[in-house]
Amino acid sequence: MAKSLSLQLDTQLQHTGTAAFDPVSGAAPVALPSMRTSTVRFQNLDALDEAQAGKAKGERSVTYGRVGMDTHAALEQVFCDLEGAERAFLASSGLGAITLALFSVLNSGDHVIVADCAYGPVRYLDKTVLGRMGLEVSYSRARVADLAAQLRPNTRVLYVESPGSLLFEMLDIPALAQFAREHKLILATDNTWGSGYIYRPLDLGADISVVAGTKYVGGHSDLMLGAVMAKDPDIVRRINDTHYAMGYSISADDAWLAIRGARTLPIRMRQTAQNALEVCQFLAGRPEVVRIFHPAWHEDPGHALWQRDCTGSNGMLSVELKLDNAAARRFVDGLKLFGIGFSWGGFESLVQLVDHAALQPHGYWTATSNAIVRLHIGLESPGDLIADITQALGRAAQG
Ligand SMILES: *Cc1c(COP(=O)(O)O)cnc(C)c1O
Image 1 (tube, rainbow, N blue to C red):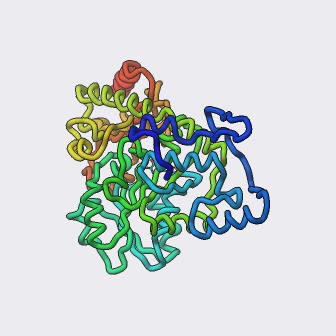
Image 2: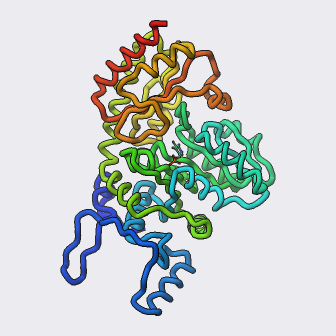
Image 3: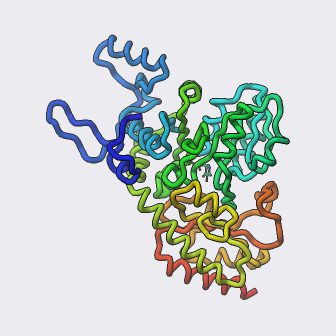
């Protein structure tokens, strides 16, 4: 990890990943260009040998196009800055980054405990691939008190996500890290929610942090990207070797877009967080609202952990509404400023009617017949978003 000019992330993100000066002209572009290449050519065989030797030592060494050149290296540095990591490894999607993290540290016959609030497709990965590879997976509420009963002699990894998907359950990462150390487990956590900017799991004791750059880092809903970060040299080495062996690679243009997105991550994140709190304030006064899931909201059960471990929040929230399924569908269809769709972290507001089946495995919320609606609050005027929600609740009530 290169030395930074400032300890402040807001400053770091503007000065990381810039182009080096041309030795002849002494000039450089402000924004690093997208360096597209499928392979690399060397001045002579000595230069190639040196690059190969670096690669053999596990260093970031460019010998072929897959690993990428300056644009990729600059984006890796952005993720290192964000997460306080030594190395970052890029994958073509957030889910790709999750598979990279797991395949890097699991051996055949190992057991991994997965937090019940983790991103849903991890269960699909388990069902379709991990089982076939001879890996055992079990799911648990990710609290120390619940985890001890899950341990097996072959348990090797604790895989969590904080705050959890869909309901944003805050986990006690320092306590989980302590538990992991006591039982010689590797703690890997999905930090897409925090994206390194507002939550730094590696600083809190996690061994591996995984981020879907598709969300807040990219920030403009126009690219797919994942990254895996670590500090520990042994773990870095395992990820490095697995990354190479499995052929993970991203396009220079996507790396370039993500660097561009990262420059404005601080202001986008702060603004969506502020907009989301305004929406929470409004929702709290509505008779249809039973519960708001948003750790920065003072009534959220994870609020104290959020205050302790996070430096900010974002635009994600879920809300339990006293609406039956038909009324909830009218509500969602009635929203005009919220796109109906998955994903989040872009500039725009999105809504998802959460399938109760996806919440069954969570111990965090006891299923009722009420609807759970997940909102990504974007950069629109919060007043407009609140007016839109108001009129859509009116539609929901119209039977
Ligand atoms: C979206 C998401 C992912 C997957 O990212 P993709 O780039 O869509 O594959 C992983 N984890 C979390 C928490 C996510 O929200």
